[in-house]
Length: 142
Image 1 (tube, rainbow, N blue to C red):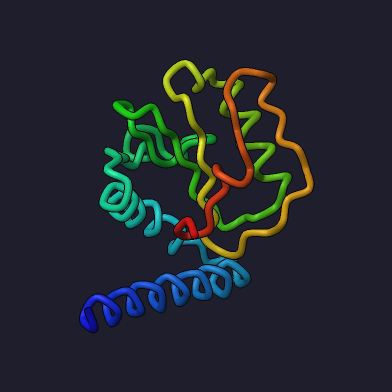
Image 2 (cartoon, rainbow, N blue to C red):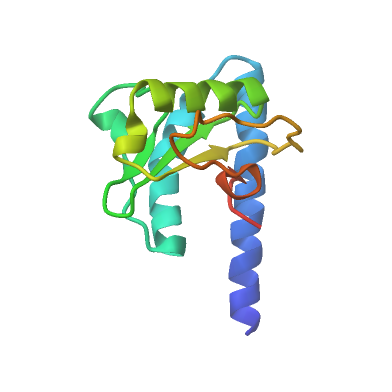
């Protein structure tokens, strides 16, 4: 049991370090770490949830609204360091504009920095459901 606790603490510490590093590097306009995170998180989320996420940016560089996709489970993920409501609204607008809801039932926004308490309602124009408490994640869900 002690070994498990050590591993969990190491994972938590590493994710916290990643969040701080993303914030600091982004503050000085260095965004390479964001791209690295897009390669890291599919494996982690696949391991935790049994998804089959893949980085779609290999197919379309800097793909709008979606960075990771699992066609089998119909889940799309936007990985971002921007925790603003404006960014989330823009992601939803792009998701709708590209009719991604035809391929994916769920859009998740994975925030690499700090999640805020969002008072905004995120309008999907009835094309898919988006629940801010469920679909906005910070690094890992609680």
